Structure formats: C-alpha cells, structure tokens
View 1 (cartoon, helix red, strand yellow):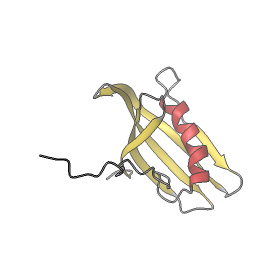
View 2 (cartoon, helix red, strand yellow):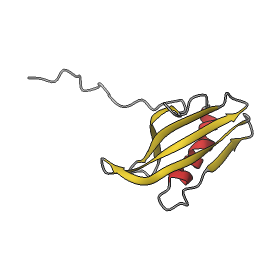
View 3 (tube, rainbow, N blue to C red):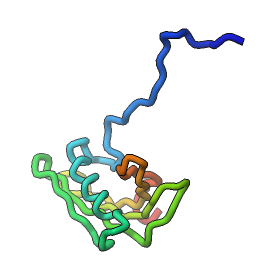
View 4 (cartoon, rainbow, N blue to C red):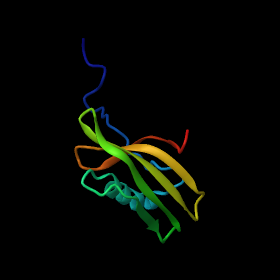
Length: 114
C-alpha cells in the first residue's frame, strides 16, 4: 500500500499563542511562568512566589501544594494560582509537570475548589 501523503506534505504541532492561565496575556504569562518554575522546583522551599507585569498591571502568585510526584517519567507538582490586579481576580488549581527541556507545562487547570 502506498503512502497517502505526498512527499512534500508536512505535519507538525501548532505552538499555542495564548497563556495557559485564563485572562493572562502572553506578556503576563512570561512573568507568571517564571514564578511557576521557581514555585514548583523540587529543590525550592515550597513557598508562594509572587509575579507582576508592570506594563499590564496584572499580578499574582503561584503556591506549590504538596510534594513532587512522578507522572509518566516527568516530575509534577500541584499548585494554586491567584491572579488579579487590573484583570479579573481568579483562584485556580492545577498541576505543573517539567518536560525534558526543563520547562514546566500546566495541566489539569480549573477554578479553585471545583
């Protein structure tokens, strides 16, 4: 059976152009993701890490919840996120997992308490 794709067909993933945390712009997410990395680091103190984007007025904090654990060979940690400032205030809970590249990805994100 021959391939259904022509030799010049390309495939790939589309990189998201929006923040994984609702209401945050990508510029806000740049600040928040740095806080996420510090807060979820297994070598860290497990304390809340604050972030702020002076350009937009958005701010918040990331607080690790519990110990790190492994999911499919990746280090993960639950967290609480609070966002606010000049954007609608929200409290969220989720999980961050560290990829092979060392970057933390957000998953299982939902409003806190749901």
